Image 1 (cartoon, rainbow, N blue to C red):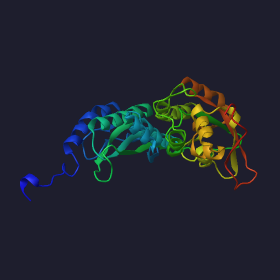
Image 2: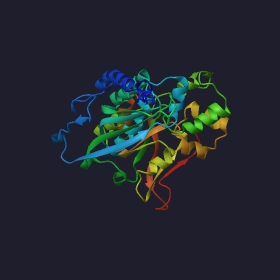
Image 3: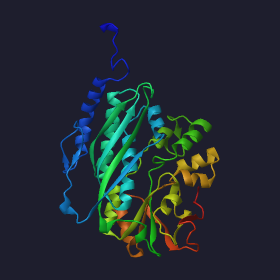
Length: 356
């Protein structure tokens, strides 16, 4: 093979130069999402985070890994990539905070068919914004170019986060008691679950254009579907600091009942009332246009509840005041009771949503 026809990495579809430019563009975003414990900067082989162990007597590390699923298809269709990163952070850190853990740092992984530095910078900009909202550091990550496996415009994202909680303050099912009160923290919309069904109903069955104004929403379909996932980490930690929280449940895939059941002990059941809230219009539109039955809706979507807090009955008013002050919509969703069947469901919804 002559020198003029020799194979190169760039010729095979991987541009090291584009990757280097992407790193330079994302450095300011990573610097924005920092904490005092971060050591070094972006570009090293590993991220360094100093654990100031004098803050904890018996620290327990918590970790979580997640992605954002097919919501990325909406970002690609609209060529808007600066909010997917917020969704990614939310999916990771709000799983951490369920245990009472303070999110410390996050590392991302971005797989692309072809590196477009400006797209990478937009994605990482969103991740940095999410980290700022969560109070954690963006400690680094990896961008991998996969020509031949992914189309040029394709990408996927995932991340791993690490948090810490004092062993004696670890939240979970063992803290839940009969008479405890279940509080709902409102979602910002679809969040990052159920998009395969939402896209099928709205885009394929309903043939609704993403750039079309929808009267029920008061804005375009694309704006509603790309609404960033609400990040509850700081709000949950504020509740822990000021009230007696037994545990939290992050409402993602599986819906309200299934996710709440994960943090309920055997022998107790959380009884929840649908009549305490009206889901956002996007859920009604999906249900009606796709003729999606209520059980399927409630297993697939958060239905307007993105996080649940179980608190002692004495602290209900204080908890609601804390959340109101932090501009988080919240309400009493139900309570915890002894179960008729110890092996039966650990969370049950009853009643009907008003005007749904």
